[in-house]
Image: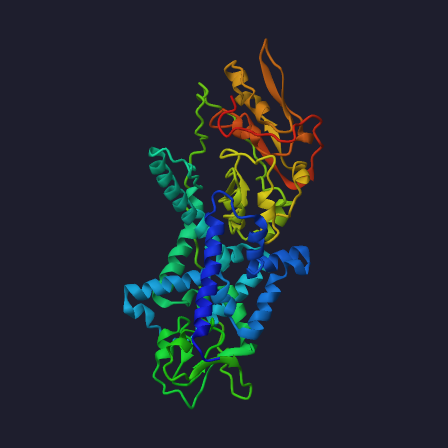
Length: 519
């Protein structure tokens, strides 16, 4: 097929895919059902591989479809289905508008050794250490973090601005939504990759895909035996070089009439720009000698890039309207383990499978899920963790378990989630204002959905909290409601392995806890 209709199909299809992904991550009202999001995530390569590894079922085998597609058509995944790849195409187009030389790519020699070293190191680190390298370099995760950390807050601010204007005319179609930030340290890596990928795509086209991205390198290897490819008609080609100048992957050596299929992402720009109709997309002629990259070079020493993180403290105040206690609490919360989301099973399993794509953070209605920066250690940076100083886990919500693309969070029925103990509440009497200020409180007990936290007689007419650990599920309602500061009088210590809690005797089926101070 030599018609440029291929390019039009690619542009329309990839535009729709990109729009759908953007809508998923900026949907601050959770209007898109989880089943549609899961369908979209089915064909994301790394999440699908991890989910298949965990479930061992073809229902999670979207990566097999991608492998088959690559065997047939080469790296069309990178142009049609990868949101970061589509975003790079858009950015490179903007670069061409800014300066004409940015869209004149030309043939460049491949970074063969660097590409394969990065792929090998990523695979080895993943097998030995966990998914940390994939978390950093996976194109889907990079895109997802950028949308969650930067794009979504911008959309919310625009919504709030319009809501304020409409409110002056007594039109309340839009409502004000609070913008909740994360610890500053976790913005560093998404910002660094945004600058890196953005700068490369703006000026060099698909250089990130063909120099760093391990998914692109792996699919490039498979594309060496793909059935359909971009190919030259030697008798018609005049060697004008227009195709090479428009190739965003810089993989067309028009002088040798050769195309590096490991780098070609099948964008079809070359077909569109060829005035001689000498380039087409069709079944490869295996009689012809296929270009092979020289892999006989000696090993080279790779310089490691060390990311230096400056730990910046972020205020953990709750911004409640209720007055603060007169005295500051003095006993530090003795946390022995972070709290990973329900469905994680255990900290170890969760850390192995989570790629820090932030999709669960994005759909969490209470924003209790926050990107970790030191809770799980360096290998778990940006993986979601429960932060009960920020908010609490809604008792009747399972959104994070429904949406996880890698099955790091296993799907839980609502009744099962209500009995999954992800941590236990610990009471520090010396921080409680009932003891320190002789003041009636009971905020934690009022907020507790299972009544694991309840009040018992203390002094005179005062009552003080007590925790029944076997019915506590670690939801954090009590910790968030506690007015003690800077250290809470009650906090949730995570379980390394999630266990089943006992069913509480008398609990309402629908419990609504106010976000503000419960009195």
